[in-house]
Image (cartoon, rainbow, N blue to C red; front, top):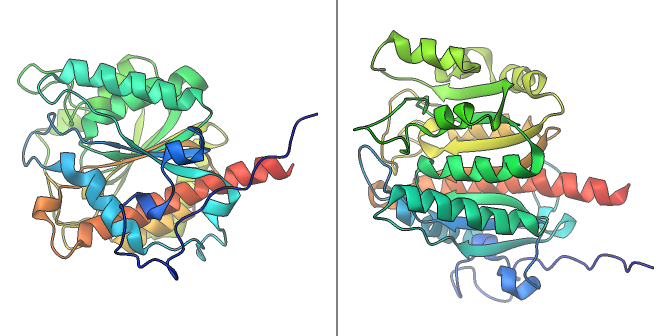
Length: 324
């Protein structure tokens, strides 16, 4: 006879220990080793930014997000849920990847993600640059098969190579399509904008199966219509969400490596994500926070709330499954 699942261990009580005291785990949650080495949702950092093409510094993004997340609270009124009571969420620390060898780093990240997913966890990964999305998608696809992808970004990230390198922060989704780990009937970019190298960039992207919702589309059509369109495209497929913080306008996220004017607001991003709460979210990443270019934690605060919404979606689904 199986025993009932134990109650999740939640964040440190901020009415007893000030938010600014103690180690900065995500949302002041327990470390993975403090909950027996397994969790329903594992928040994991990947401090790797050797794949950037412009400003470096995203290797420090994960810890900046953790610091900003000290102010998160355990009840999410926008989703009417207490995510840390519905599922065990824990901070799994960082995946240490070789900063001098991108190919080796990609292999290391994939293997570490394999190990975490094998415990039954879903991943909320804090980057790091967007190179890390490829090994994470490889790992998730081993478990779920080709997944639907929602990619929030100012840029397409479906270019072929930079300086002959196949693995960079501008190429992960081309590689993922080539490797057959994405469901090409359910791929979408959201928030893209800015100049390209040529029209061929868009033509190649369309051939891979991507639909595009630009930042201007979000402004003109509104978040509810955009979220509805995305839900219809995703259906009930297993979904992976990858968010480059530069999807936000530099006014909302100055601390990033390749900023582009004309982006969406943090409010629009959070509302679109809340509109996806019914989708089958199997894991997610949030990348390209570069705190050296930030001011007053603007970018890190936006990123921490974005990760919180994604974590809430996953926790709600886990809680609903357990109540059946």
